[in-house]
Length: 391
Ligand code: ATP
Ligand code: MG
Image (cartoon, rainbow, N blue to C red; front, side, top):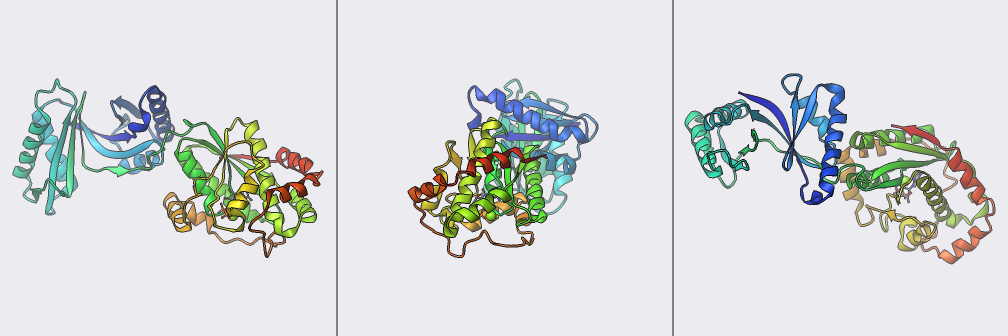
């Protein structure tokens, strides 16, 4: 007899030492949070593994796997079985049943991998593998052994209990969400910043989003897009706090008071300042942007230099060295790309310079800004009037 379970593998190397206990607890909490709403599940620890069992009956993998898959810090999920007995007979019988159920009678090659960490079990790993392999060969005429490139690897792990699985679903890796401090991400409706946000969340950074909204120059559709992107990120992180900061007044103020070719740089500097105010208020340690070196006029090295100069916090730019196509590939994989490319119409482009300065000089930018005596007031107001959306 055997029960269906889900074996969960996590990145062991990143989790050595004192942190391991905290990290594993975070993973267990995340699994529970995602599964509790849909059933009666239990998570058991085994060295190097977590085992999810269904206390409410036979496990439905189609329900469980999509809910565990997005959790950061996990490297693979293996739908498998846990034996009720500790004997070679049970292993052989269940191994055969497993292979028959999953790999019917199509011609296939296989091998058996056995790992015995429980030395109390009398049979050595090599022997388990050999005996089970032979037993399957005897009972399944469609199977032949291939140790180098088998179609199927049947894994048998003899621990406190005996586990078996042959399917390994690779997941995202990374670190448990929230284990690396907090960062505030400048989240636009574009392709890049949702990917950047996701990448830092994957490294364990608790992320919050800030979106600068300038109605009527940016439409409600644009805002809805950002909300939908935030929701998608929350599928991975479990929660997401989004600030929608009204930026129209500030933007109009800049439009009137700075040279048009430098407008973008001043605007980005204002965004960074506002984001940093929110970050300080919320106990974050960093800002996150979707900037990629050389992608657009404001993302030249000089542009980044001039924008970065207003920040006291480290600005994390996980896409800095990536090509657009690489960013799109990630966006597609994580389901943000389709939302990002949704068409919408903004009613005008008065804020976009035809010929933006591509090599702004910081001293010039600062000289202009010193004359913007109302800038701080506009910044304070924008942050104060931010709408907070909890997802
Ligand atoms: P994205 O695809 O993320 O919109 P982009 O290629 O359009 O980026 P820029 O417009 O130069 O590049 O913006 C650079 C970064 O500044 C963005 O990745 C994002 O982090 C931030 N940003 C730009 N506009 C906004 C906005 N309206 N609200 C919040 N953050 C923004
Ligand atoms: Mg953009």
